[in-house]
View 1 (cartoon, helix red, strand yellow):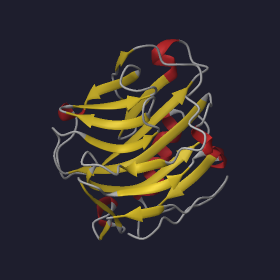
View 2 (cartoon, rainbow, N blue to C red; view 1 turned 60 degrees about the vertical axis):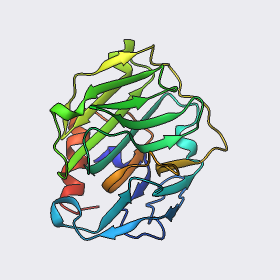
View 3 (tube, one colour; view 1 turned 135 degrees about the vertical axis):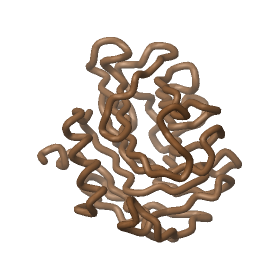
Length: 219
């Protein structure tokens, strides 16, 4: 449970007008736009945020824990409307963005624009309108792409393909806001719940424990 000390932000996504934030480090409540509340949260246990696939987003402000760092973990629950679509689930920056994007049948975890990313075929592991827990673990001290970028779905490691070389340090997007969803027509379409940002690269056991904790409503 000590890994929870590295949780910089936690957003339960239970209200369309703002984000309750655990605020362990540098709390930021965020500002929601064009978000609807949906009573069908994780396994029906909580209210979550419904994104319209057009212009729904939460502006988190400058999440400094992602700027020029050697490690982070972003974990959340997602329930996508359409598998084969182009949807931004998360974005910080523009030209050299840090982002999570679905594109056709794949989900990209982008470190530095599309040229540097890890990705896998989520169409083979997900169905539309079902809940899945995702954890993006970045460890710049790891060896090679596999050691530096890992993704877990449902607590299990996904076999990733890579484009480019995963860097030892993330891009410095100081002063640039991070968004859950996006402000344009490629915003995420579906439901999101229990969105967390950690400053540590979580292990598989820690990811699985956090998944269980949020699923049971213990956070």
